[in-house]
Length: 332
Image (cartoon, rainbow, N blue to C red; front, side, top):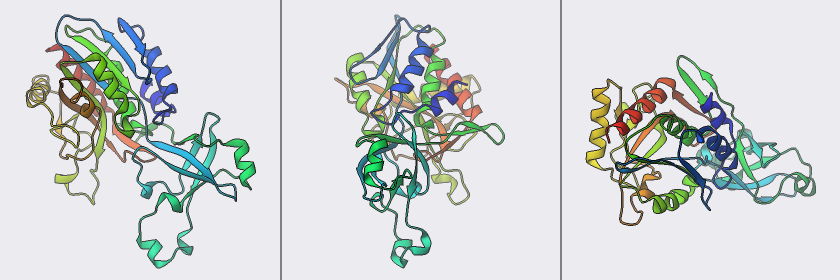
């Protein structure tokens, strides 16, 4: 399964090479042109005579970077992208190209003070344990600046669900690859961008070069449909279809484009939902600021527990996102 290979691939921000190799091989027979720019973005082109449209998904995942060594052989580290320190303790990670296994270490709760138990965990309180007994031994296996990622493997989960790491945004990459398998009248560009999780950096470059009239960001978005979260603030719900955004931290989405996507869903009996949150941002924020601007929208697959060691998503939501985007692009 394509999404399984994408999810299992290694690709934190700035280290997207493995993901890039998979995508280039997958799309090569479906596009007229394909190139990799200096940043490492993949820019693919399906030539057409209509509007110039850019569909975007980012290749990178949140991860960690090694910043130092402790005398006992454990490693100091920082985040690559937005990983809250609450979700990192005692997780298994792989470090660097050699996939050195490590465990994110934290003082046991039995030894924590009353204040430590009440307060949030900070990165400075944690370390990565690779089983080394000294700094010298650790330096034999790990280098300063090596990345680390969670070791989670993709699998089916429950009734019609799937779980894995990096659904933000490998699930968007998988949707975009499926889109490219069909032909359209518009002049279609696909950008698989780097470094979204550290400030949409790749998207600024790709959007500036392509200069589209319309830009769509495909995302795996926040979902909090669990008992402790009231439905009206849960943002999205798994199983209710692709989520169409109204606004987020970086964009106010084009009303006309958003409405046309909704009308396409209703005409084709595709379930959809609105994203009931304005938190976060994505590559649309870069597209809207490119040159003299771009009309943007975002369509997402709801994913539980994103920016952690694992995500959960619905196969139906994924398939309906693919169907919705294909049908909408055909209307241009």
